[in-house]
Length: 120
Image (cartoon, rainbow, N blue to C red; front, side, top):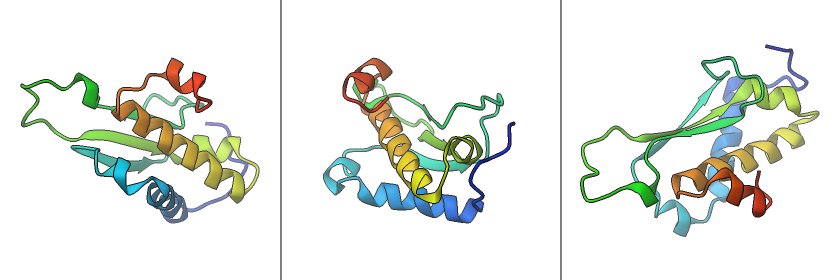
């Protein structure tokens, strides 16, 4: 992985993810179901440009037989985010965008629609 532009501890980065979640309206968070948020240093495949990923079954794809499954996962990647940012303020903004982007996937909104909405 290419070096990072901003130095930031994992603990501080996790705080920023928590802060971004605190900014999501309660009404929206209350609609989320069976999902956990994680912070990892880097994607398992080494994808230097992947900032976050949603893994699971979107709410719009869940049917009557959706039961007894492990929680969906939203993972935010620290090192790729730090690599593309120039300051801590940039990291705060990028983390917030990435969190919203991945939450949107949980609600069944695809990348094309997010791009149309200005969240790509």
